Image 1 (cartoon, rainbow, N blue to C red):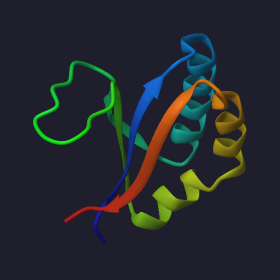
Image 2 (cartoon, rainbow, N blue to C red):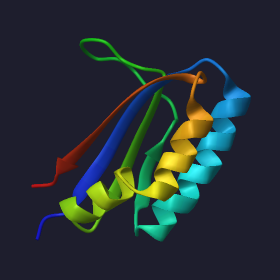
Image 3 (cartoon, helix red, strand yellow):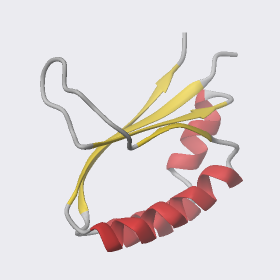
Image 4 (cartoon, rainbow, N blue to C red):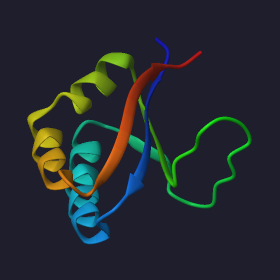
Length: 95
């Protein structure tokens, strides 16, 4: 079974609120067996539109990644993020 990845691209407008969200989301990531591979860091937009913050979280399967993204624990974290920035999140099955 291929691994899966939750990939997020964000622009943060309220760092304090975003930090609360990130802490709560980190708890849910651990609970659902996710491993953060990328969290912020230096970026360079090589083509197209980029976002200042990028995150890649590895999960054992697509189902595990979906379980995390749609979990009540992550929903609680998401509420803390409201008004703190703009984000796109996708779940991608690995090769």
